[in-house]
Each structure stands twice: as structure tokens, then as C-alpha cells.
Image (cartoon, rainbow, N blue to C red; front, top):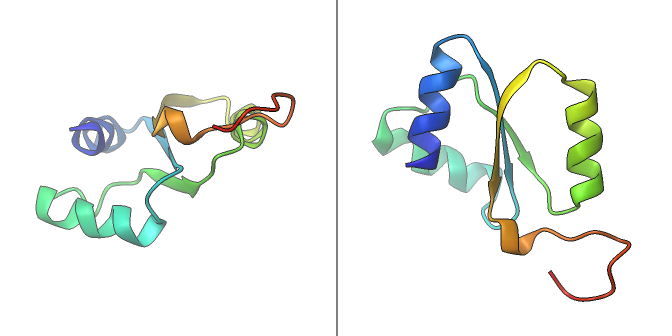
Length: 83
């Protein structure tokens, strides 16, 4: 559902970013095919560091939607506990 909603926004001309902490970019692309959204312009990134994700968003201020998949895999270097 997340991928389909993100693709719909991307197809309407909006900038959409998808940060995956669990699946590889190849796996996300494979999931997109049967959903019919493999041709969307979603910007994919494999990332778990919140600071890096935030920094990339600073560079792309025109982003309409950011999908974090999944939030429990994300971490910050200023927090000592596991994700």
C-alpha cells in the first residue's frame, strides 16, 4: 500500500522519496512490478541513519512525501540503544 500511494503521488508530478532500512533497492523494485508501479519516479534509498536521511532531504526541499520503511530499523548516532 505504501509503495502504491507513493507511486500515485510521483505520477502526479510530485517528488517522492522512499528510504528502506529493511529491503534492498532490488527487492523494492521487484515488489513494485506486480503492483504495476515499477515505472514510477520514486527516488529510492537504502538507509537507516536518520541524520543521513535528514541531510538528503535538506538537499531536496521540494520533496512532497518521504516514506520510511520501516521506522523501527532507523537509528541515530547520538542514541546508544539499538534501533
